[in-house]
Image 1 (cartoon, rainbow, N blue to C red):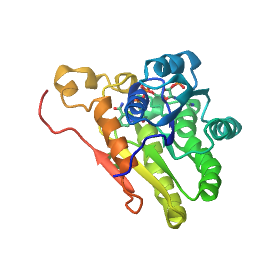
Image 2: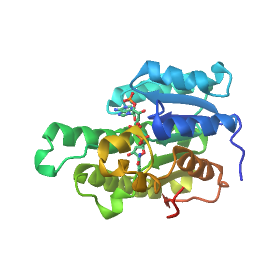
Image 3: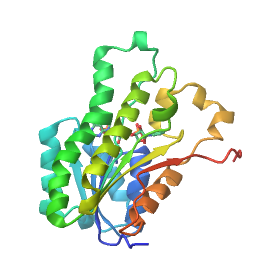
Image 4: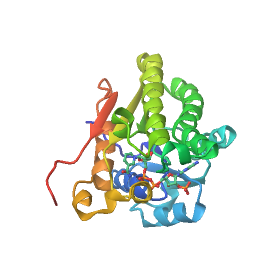
Length: 243
Ligand SMILES: NC(=O)c1ccc[n+]([C@@H]2O[C@H](COP(=O)([O-])OP(=O)(O)OC[C@H]3O[C@@H](n4cnc5c(N)ncnc54)[C@H](OP(=O)(O)O)[C@@H]3O)[C@@H](O)[C@H]2O)c1
C-alpha cells in the first residue's frame, strides 16, 4: 500500500465530526493538510490539535456551495503546497423533516452542499490532476442513498445523486490515473446525526453506530490503495455487536 507521507490532502467539512477525524488520521500518516469548512475558528481549533507542524496545515474557510470560492481554495492549496494529491468531499448537511414541512430553501441547501459543491470540485480538480498526471477524490456519501430514509427524503436523494454523479465522472477520468471513490458510512456518532435523528440518540441505537475514527480508517484505506487499484463504491457498517 502506498505511503501517505507528504501527500497534499484537502478535507472539506474538517471543522468537526467525521471530517475532523479524517484530518487527524491523515496527520498521523504525515500528510500535508488543507482544512475547509465555513467557520474559521473551529477549523483553527482542529488544526492546532493535529500532530503536525502548523506550516504543514492550511486553514481555508470556504463555502463549498460557491463555485468561485471553491476555485480560490483550490488555487490557495496549489500556491501553498504546489500540488493536490487527494481531495475529500466530506462537507454535508441533512435536515430531518417530513417532505411536506421541508421548505424549498432547505431542499436547495441540501442539494447545493451535498451535490453541487462536489460538481464544483470536479470542474476545478480534474484539469489540475490532468496536468499533474493523476490524483484522487473521495466523496463521503451515506447508506441512505440506497435505501432511502423517512424524514430524510432530500438528504437521501442528494446522496443518491452524489453516487451517480461520482460514478459517471469516475468513468470519464479513470484512464488518466484519476481515481474517484465514494464511501458510504452507516450512522456515525456526530452533530449531524444527532440533529437528524431523535431515535438515533437512544442508547440501544447508539451502540450500533460507527465511530468517526472507524470512518476515517476506511478513508485512509482508500487513500493507501495501490495505484492500479480503485475502489469505486464502498459501504462501511458496524458489526451488530453492542459495545
Ligand atoms: N454522521 C452520520 O451518521 C453520517 C452517516 C453517513 C454519512 N455521513 C456524511 O458524512 C459527512 C460528514 O458528516 P458529519 O456527521 O461529520 O457532519 P457534521 O458533524 O454536521 O459536520 C459537517 C461539516 O461540514 C461543514 N459544512 C457544512 N456546510 C458546508 C459548506 N457549505 N461549505 C463548507 N463546509 C460545510 C461543517 O462546517 P461549517 O458549518 O463550519 O461549514 C462541518 O465541518 C457528511 O457528508 C454526511 O452526509 C454522515
